[in-house]
Image 1 (cartoon, helix red, strand yellow):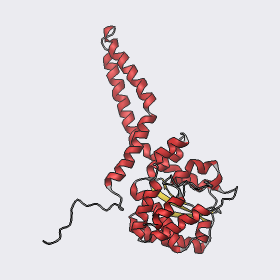
Image 2: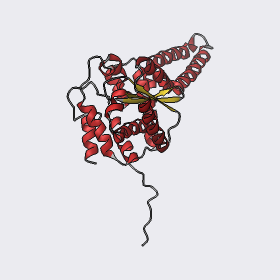
Image 3: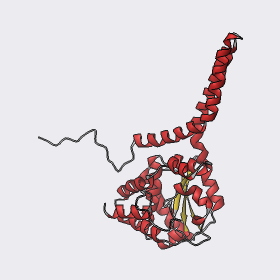
Image 4: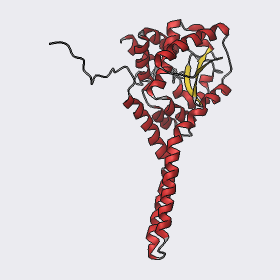
Length: 278
C-alpha cells in the first residue's frame, strides 16, 4: 500500500491558530475580570429599574437602555484592551540607555532581517541598549515592534547564540504571546496575577518554536546557559523594580534570580537543559 500523508497531522513545534486564540482568550478573560465590579453595579441598577415597574411603568425601558449602553461600552473596551500594551516600546526606549557600536548594530540588523523573514514578522526596529546583563525583548510599539538587545549580549554571545535569542523573541510574536505579556507589563496588578496573565511556562514553549525554526537548539541552549550563570551588577536595569514589572516580556524573565529553580519552566537553566537533551 502506498504511503498516505495524514491531513490531520499538526507540527507540534509550529504555532497553531488555536494556540494563538487561547492566548487572545486569556487576555480577554483578564479584561472581563477587570471590569467585573462595574458590571455588577450595572446589573444591580438595571434589576432595580426593572423592579421599579411597580411604581413607575417606564422604568424598565430606562433599565434596558442602561444595559444596552453598558454592553456596547464593554464590547468596545474588550476589543481594544490589547492595545494597552502598545506603549511599552516607547516606555522601554525612554527607560534604557542606548549602547553598542555600528558594527554590532549591523550584526543585529542582519540577523533580525533574516529571521524576521523566516518567522513572517514585519515592521521590527532593532535597538542595542547599554547594560552589563544578558537579555533581550520584542515588544509592541504602536502598530510595529521594537527589539531590544543588551550591549553585553551583543559583545559576549556567539552568532549562533544571538540567532537563538532573536528567534525566541520572534517566536513569541508568532505564538500570539506579545499582547498578553505587554498588557501584563503595563497593568497595576500583583506579581502573581502578572505572571498568570503573561502565561506561565511560555518562555519554554517559545524556545521549542525558535529551536525548531533555526534547526540548532544548542545555539539557543548556549545563550540560556550564559544567562543562567551571569552575575548582575547592582546598577543593572535587570536588578531594578521596573524590570520586575516588565520581566515577562524578556528573553530571560529571571535575570535577577540568584539560584536556579528547576521546577519553573521559565527558568533559564531548566530551559537550557531541555534544549541540550532535545
